[in-house]
Image (cartoon, rainbow, N blue to C red):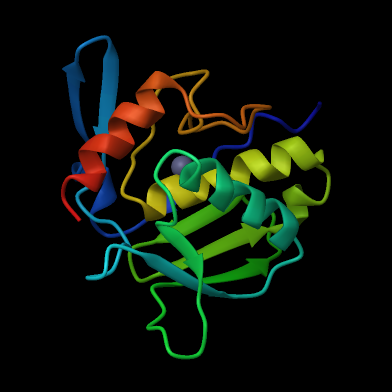
Length: 165
Ligand SMILES: [Zn+2]
């Protein structure tokens, strides 16, 4: 539990000035001004990672709320997202780009529990779906945690982002 304060960052030219936060009922909605969902309302992903098991678990966390939005690409699909790993001594555990990539930093990931790896994978997928950082206890909180379920803030933010697809 020593390295848990690493921040998950989202890298894009736009994200720093693109935070949209408003209150809807009791939940706090936080969405980016971009997402990786294609014209067909799916994110079709490809690529490889040491953490594919946790990544697939992460896709299921979102798909259990809205069915089948994130899919593993087959040959006849256009790909919206490519997954890979890197290793670097930096503050970033995972990086999602508006260019269509998610990269996991094995320098930190390898020390994490399966639950924490799943948290990072699902969090980065949240950015791919257009969600921005939110509050402590949310999957979209900016710090690695043992959270692997969607909070009311996560669901409300996904609803708001989904409405744009
Ligand atoms: Zn993040």
